[in-house]
Amino acid sequence: MTFKDKLSFVRQNMKKNRSRVFMTVLATAMGCAFLIVLASVGFGLQRSVVQQITGDGLLTEISVHGKSLDGNYYPLADKDLAGLKAVKNVKAVTHKQFIQQNIQFYWNEFEASAPAVAVDFEEEAKAGLELSAGGLPTAEHEVIAGFHFASALKGYKEKDENIMTQNNAEMIGKTIEMEASQWEGGKQLIKRFPVTVVGIAKKPTKEWIKDTNLSISGSMLQQIEEFTKTIRGIQLPQQTEQEQQGTGSEQNGSEAVQQMKDELDISKPRSYDNVNVYAKDAKNVKNISDEINSNGYTSYSIANELEQINVFFLVLKIGLIFVGTIAILIASIGIYNTMTMAVTERSQDIGIMKAIGAHPSTIKNIFLIESSYIGLQGAVVGTIVAYGISYVVNIALPFVILNFAKESSPEGLIFSYIPWSLSLLCIAISFGVAVLSGVRPARRATQVDVLKALRRDI
Image 1 (cartoon, helix red, strand yellow):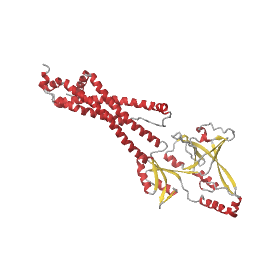
Image 2 (cartoon, rainbow, N blue to C red):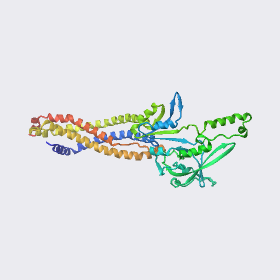
Image 3 (tube, helix red, strand yellow):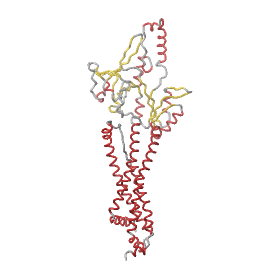
Image 4 (cartoon, helix red, strand yellow):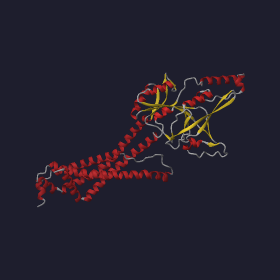
């Protein structure tokens, strides 16, 4: 008897008891749907948390904050950047140097006070810097404006100071003047540096972040430092006439300013802020982090945090799947009952099959096929229903939160997410439980006495 014949025989017998089989399939489908929907909450919340964490970062990014040596903490210098670039599987090492004074920007009748930061555009390109418009700078006077830089510009010729209405893309190709200042000899010196906007930074993923930075080249930073005669354009304190002459009690103030000038001399080695190391692949992040930390650096990567979060959600998902499996086990009682009744009702058929020489394993396989077929049907139907419930929940949940809690739902919230692996797992559990539920009735079918089974037909 071929498998096709067995399957045909099973389907014919199932049609004779459609109502009972339908209710059994329905119970199995409800158990599967419950398991998938329940476990999907764990998958959905994990996905939301991971997206929240990685929204403004990359899995390949490692932040290096400084170096600890002999119990002291030191900022990163040029030799440290060279050492980080030499680490195996490192793709790029980026850094930032913030100009330490209030920089004013002027464009036509608009002005803005915004942070200016010097970056290495070549390394940024290697790291995969994304822009919302334009391209990367290729000359020292070219810059990248933050996504919200345009909205920071205000009209200084208008009394009402209306905010500029032009969008970001319209700024590309426009020349902006950067104004730096310094105190010297009791006078404030001012100098403007013309720069050209060639790109607009990517919009931050979090709505509450406002990116008004202007990214400039290292060469532009050097020009500003040559004007201010201080590292990163730090502004010296304004001196009075007595302090300049160094007379009387004001001599200490003059000495303090001179000492500050010496400490901020641009000829001294510079340090870097926000140094980020980018791995060639996410799988290399841990090895790179371990090597960096072994060299005395303090670092942080999203991958370290995700590892702990994934462990927590793994335990949560296992618990939810375990609870959901109980529903399928309850449905297995129905499968067991259906198969037991099927053996009783088909005792005559079993007797005939034995009389014509059917092997016990053939009879057993027929009932196992029927039980597994019921379980498989229920799993497929339950999976389809679960996807529908998940879709509806994700759409309806924000409205429910808004109407009952009077608050908007968290940005990027995914309450229910069903990966294909969860669906396959549910189908496998349902199939396995169904087969186990049919084992005992199938064994009983092989033990039916032929004479007693045929005698009932007389």
